[in-house]
Amino acid sequence: MAGGVRPRDALLTAAVLGATLLAALLLPEGWRDGRPLDGRGAALLAALNLPLLVSGKWPVAALYASLLPQIVYHALDYPHDAAVVAAAVLVYRAARGVSRTTAVLALTPVALVTVLTILLVGGDTPGPEVAATLGWMLFAAVAGQAVRLHKAYLAEVTERARRAEHTREEEAARRVAEERLRIARDLHDVLAHSIAVINVQSSVAVHLLDARPDDPATKEIAEPLRTVSTVSSTALGELRTTLDLLRGNDVDRNEPAPSLDGLSTLVTNTRASGVEATVTEDGDRPALPPSVEITLYRIIQESLTNVVKHAAAPHAWVRVEYRPDGVALTVTDDGRGTGSGGSGYGIIGMTERAHSVGGRLSAGPRTGGGYQVAAWLPLSTVEGS
Image 1 (spheres, helix red, strand yellow):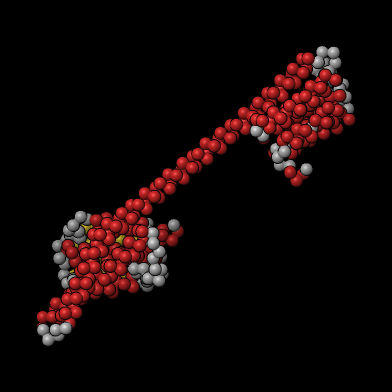
Image 2 (cartoon, rainbow, N blue to C red):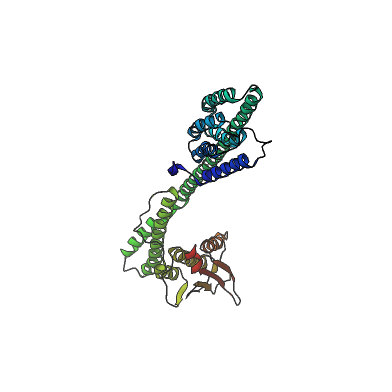
């Protein structure tokens, strides 16, 4: 029995037994029904209380285990009221732990045995005592059933809320997936075909010009076209990766992610577009978290693209400063002082990228002419997140 005893059941048993023993021993004779409690009576009172120890796990079995010592206790005419508390708790727990039908089937024999016991030992007028006993038993049973139904109702409400939340999450995930597919289709329809045509046509043009090496104009024309072919090919690869991610497809994990090792390619492409770009790195480059390195690369890429497209600048300078707590980046040019001649989404995108890793970004015309993009990406914020 000890293996199935829970601490709260042990505390309940000790409290009820202590209270009933004190009541049976200390009540004045005029207030006490039955003969005074002696050693045998105390042992019987303890025996009818002991099933409370397991009433939390086996409520019906505990109730039946208490019947025999109760019958003997009352038959020997010990203080009857002292045994009522334990009996009421056992009836309540039995009714609370089972269904309504099971409670009726389990408690009916107990009620019959109790009534027969009262009729046998209750004296000449057992009617009021029978009514009182059946009354408190019915009250305890109804209270137990009410608690059980309330708990079942709360559990059902909680489960419904959980299912509703799960359904909302699934609906949100479904809508996100549909939106990602729509974006992927739009990107493919709007960009992929056009970039592929640019790549093919520029490659064909370069091939045709390379076939005419004696023409002095071919060298000047072929070099920009070769840059267009290279950049468009790179853009197609990155676009395919983006589309695969949007569609939820597995992406080739062996394909290197954009990193600062590709800065030289960015500079070469920028110079081929007519802007003399230089990159300066101050300090030793640490092992940057991938999210920071990709963000840094993309901000530099977008900044140089804006210089080429909108600034009409002859020069652009990229400065990356590695500090113990983060990376400071500035991209400046000596153009006409605008970094976005279009919708401005490039600046917004760079700002969002910086915020996504806990950093900040500012962009605007600089004093003395030109335009500047400045970003700060704190390493500790990213690594601790």
